[in-house]
Length: 109
Image 1 (cartoon, rainbow, N blue to C red):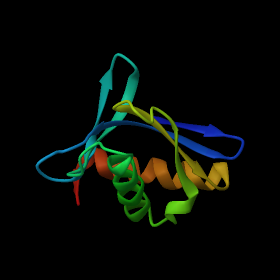
Image 2 (cartoon, one colour; image 1 turned 30 degrees about the vertical axis):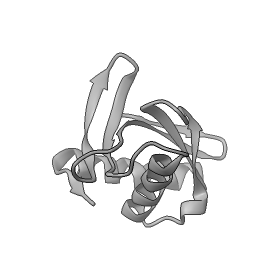
Image 3 (spheres, rainbow, N blue to C red; image 1 turned 45 degrees about the horizontal axis):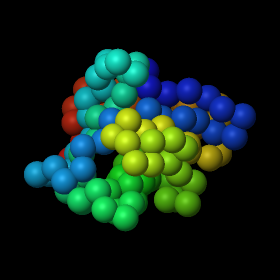
Image 4 (cartoon, one colour; image 1 turned 135 degrees about the vertical axis):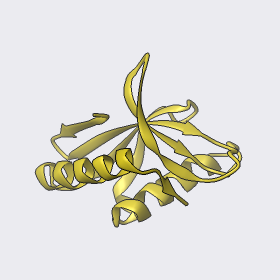
């Protein structure tokens, strides 16, 4: 599972495909950096636009404010770690349930 608890929330591992034909989330795939949630956005990766679109898309999918989600690592890389701020236990349960749903069926934007 591409999810880890931190003292201030959770870290979600992402593999981003910018400039995709359609936006979408899923599935979870194993790769050389461990399991990652595949995300696609139609935004071109210029001046952080694809990252901003990703943050909005994940926030909307989770029902969380965009201000609680940041790119913790991988700002200029397709492999990213998003930090979601909040109660670690509650967030872990919420995001874990969401990831299970995503794994079952891809979410489209």
